[in-house]
Picture 1 (cartoon, rainbow, N blue to C red):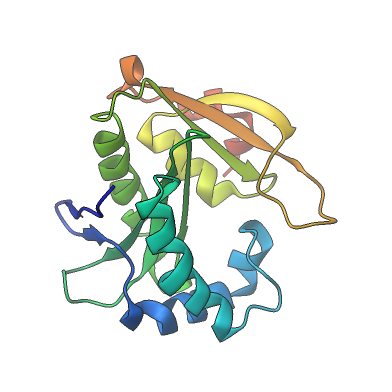
Picture 2 (picture 1 turned 60 degrees about the vertical axis):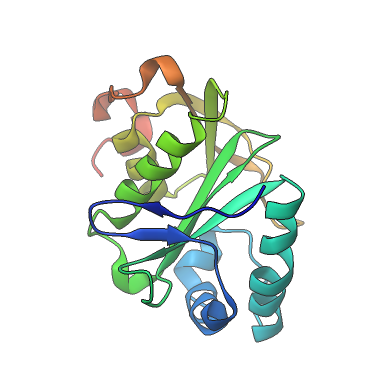
Amino acid sequence: MQPVTLTTERFVLSTPRASDVDAVFAACTDPELQRFVPVPVPYEREHAEGFVLGMVPAWWRDDVEYVFGIRETADAPLIGVVSWQRAAGFVGYWLDAAHRGRGVMTEALRALVDWVFRHDVDELRWEASAGNVGSAVVAQRVGFRWGGVAPISAVRPGEEPTGWHAVLRRADLGTVQPREAWPVLSGA
């Protein structure tokens, strides 16, 4: 598939480009991001280059994963990433630490979900490492339904594969499961 651009009220979601390597590198060296996102540790500049210049274009071309960089305007620096792994049905996302807590990812994920559901898809899946409350809050706000605790696929070798799961069905789009239905969010 050819890359597309999505827009929201506050953001532009477009394919990461060469000028985003530094932003990806900076974000992925954050210990909090590394705790929950299975990026290489230590994260080197070459990893960011390989992601932006190699993996992302190949994934789009081969219909594997559609990765969108999140920006405040079309020409602004990348502040995060949201993606859809087509075959597995998973959404994934991360946000630079300076932009967390402002509803950025909730807005970006909603745009991605709306776009995905225009592609003959009836269900999306979310998983996160146990303890990733920020990711769970975003998934709950977008309408994913709590699925429970079970092994997850996105872990680094040697790490505990236990994580959290949720599902969003096209038929449930526009509804939000109450926060109380997400046991991992009690007290969060």
